[in-house]
Image (cartoon, rainbow, N blue to C red; front, side, top):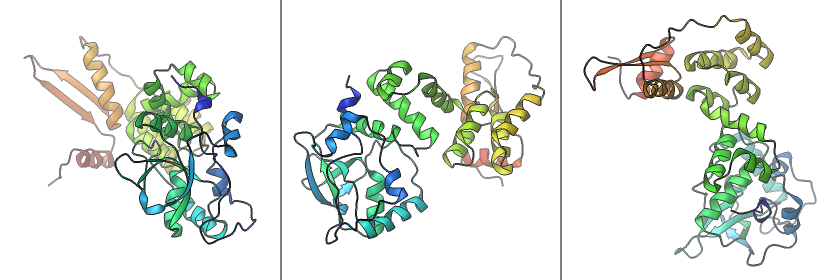
Length: 316
């Protein structure tokens, strides 16, 4: 186990300008400010006094590789372009955090600050200020998870995945994780519930087509196909959270015939497949052992085409 105070995140030693430039004195842009994490007081004190063993260098952008265990899956192109433009004007306001790659002298992997590194590449910078920290693979993953969790603009699905990853790696309960991060346990539980949504719904959240508020409402809909239908309608029509709630509350619940003699294993299997496909799924065992039927219900031709594509088939 490691305490949060031993996991320094984005804030690191002094302000740097890009090579050959002086600090302009201009305030950092909103994109630069947004890239900083909200850090506990203990961690922020390391900004002027880096931990023993840390080295502050100007590192070649080409010699840096992204973190293979980066929880963030999507980087907004427009936001990166704005940050790159700011770097051209004001330099790199805050160093990234990297580690040396074992067996490859002069090569580094990012621990925290991949967004700034990507923007530096777009800006055409040859080098970037970096704090070099000696950590192992396990600690690198932990630092990356904590750094991303504390960012305000991490999309809800990536945030939920990061919570789950941190709980798994450190063997923590929801309450223990909440205590370490200074967050509310119910808030973490709400994020983790998002991972149970149907895959198409999760994709809409990641693409910022529906909000976290919409997602919380949709999490109360147990049928995966209905979840997907409502999420798609919300994205297409720009429904508010309140309108979505009203739609769900006023709609009569569908009549579903309970499965007769179906094992708990088959029921769980149906739910798992339905969640992944975003469609209603039935698994029926046959009269002979090992035989049966898999029935996938699609709501419209678009869902049918998506299913065919995911199966790698072509409708001839």
